[in-house]
Amino acid sequence: MTIVSVDGVTKRFGERLAVDDLSLEVPAGICFGLLGPNGAGKTTTLRMIYGVTRPSSGTVRVFGIDIGRDPRAVRARLGVTLQQNVLIESLSPVENLRVFGRYHLLRDPELSRRIDELIDFLELRSHATVPVRQLSGGFQRRLAIALSLMNRPELLILDEPTTGLDPAVRLALWSRVRELRAAGTTVLLTTHYMDEAQRLCDRVAIVSTGRVIVEGAPAELIETRLAAETVEVDCRPEEEAWLLDGFHLPPHRLRTGNRIMLYLDDATPLVDHIRHRDHGDRRALVVRPTNLEDVFLALAGTSLEGGT
Amino acid sequence: MSLSVPHALSVWRRNAAMYRRTWMLNILPNFFEPVLYLMAIGIGVGSYVAQMDGMSYVEFLAPGLVCVAAMNGASFEVTYNIFVRLNFEKAYDAMLTTPIQPQDVLAGEVLWAITRSCIYGGSFFIVLMLFGLTPLPNALFVLAIIPLAGLLFAAIGIAFSLHIVTIDLFSFYFTLFLTPLFLFSDVFFPLKERLTGTWLWVAEALPLLHPVRMARAAFRGEASPILLWDLAYQVIVAALLLAWARRGVRRRLTS
Image (cartoon, rainbow over all chains, first blue to last red):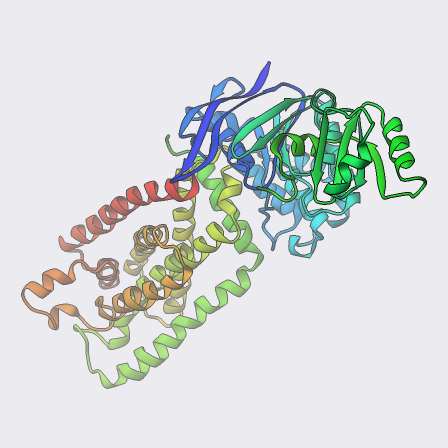
């Protein structure tokens, strides 16, 4: 079953084209990642999916329902964590959850039961009654996610869920997202962290300037678009021909400044070759697994973190 | 798409939950303000006025000030507070991820502004009662006029708030709109004795004039046909402005 189906959607804000004939399908029960630099159109795409931005053309269906026709019915079944936390700072986590639960028309005793479950699920118990403004960024983010789970959503939309969080909190949130997915929730997230996408997502779509430039499972994208291993080596442009002379060059390589990256199934022969050319002079060289960042770089010709 | 009352009430409840946190701090000034007015203007200035419109000055003043309190209660809510919720707290962005629709947000906010006007106007009324300035039971009719004035000024304020981009413009709203209304709407002196001819008709456009006239009639226990015009004015102006605000709220909250 398809949970989200975006078909040929374009969105203009005046002169600016934010989303350009974008299509994607999110099947049930997976974690789907929308990747791309800031300004690529990820958030606008999400907003069209939960129906607060209307496409200039094209259609968006969620749970098989046209979002433009019945946004209430769709939103009753999904949850959204916005990029910026929207919490009531003077109220405690429990009070925030109570207010939010009312938006979904939940009533006691169901409302209190659900609050209790979410306080436990996101480990908010120790600060459950402290005003939100006194909580750390990690606590606030967990509360924001708890709010979006209030209605037991079938589809959870997370807009940059871990931006600005410390590594421990990120790991904890990832494990919650995995648990939800294992319990049958479909997850649609945006991120510009490639490690996040690679660890969490079953499928990703890389978006650049409002279009999907490539889509697939992370491992499959790396394998078909590049190769399993990457050799990163310091090498000035004028040295390159000399350094690689005599080596059977891999089909994919990329230069950024004084560094080149070469993508191969097995890095060993190339490392040996370079060491041999340098006559034991050990230049800076790294062998690492190829990641989605490389795929993006190779396809869009620009770095993800830097943006376009 | 149509209005959903339960969702509008959930918007109201958000504001109520926040207000409950600080209600003691919020409500105390509501009691002090009328005391200050009654002492300075009613008793201070009033002692130089033998009679106004056939009654003591403080009796003349009392019903109008209740309406001013209702106006202020609603106005603060739909100007500064709505602007903060819209632009700083992003409360409406959160609501619109749930089944709540823009028109529910509008209805919930209007309902909350009316609630604030009742708290504000009601506190004022209690103080007047303690001063023995509310002829009972007639004056109790004013308890129905307070929410009506609240509705009118909620509608005016929301229509204004949805069409401005910077919070600084609210000082124009208060200084150049609400303050003149406060001073020239029959609260401090009877307009009909100072204006003649066409100007009397023009004065009928002043929104605060209508609840004030109704409140004074209630305190005096005198019904007259003009009160139907006052009622119609408030309901019709509120309805027209809210219809306009409904389009405005959709434009501001969705894209």
